[in-house]
Amino acid sequence: MQIPISLLTAQDNAPAHRAGDTVEFLSRNTPDFISPLLWPPSSRDLNPVDYDVWGVLQQRVYRSRIRDVDHLKQCLIKERQRQEEKKTK
Image (cartoon, rainbow, N blue to C red; front, side):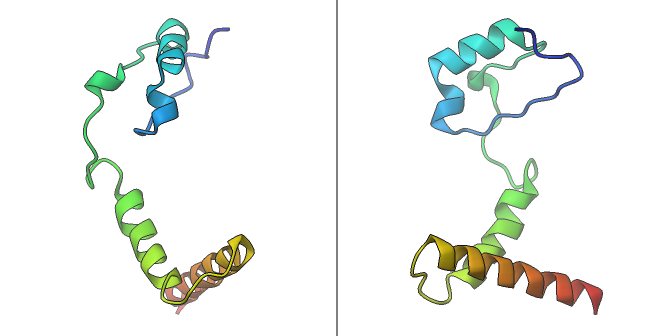
């Protein structure tokens, strides 16, 4: 299986992405694959969404105790709607 050249993949540092089988597969099938040994460390400059948007969202959602997964989903949706409303005002 060859991964199309037009496809750009970016890995985070999740254990599954660093797993030997994953790295071996991507090395064989992905043009210009960069080994996890050469991946840059976590950086706000490289992925501001992970640090800023998700951090703020997490802080606001967890102001109250989350009962279960469904409650978490509801809280996330409500907070995201609040953010959208603020942008349109």
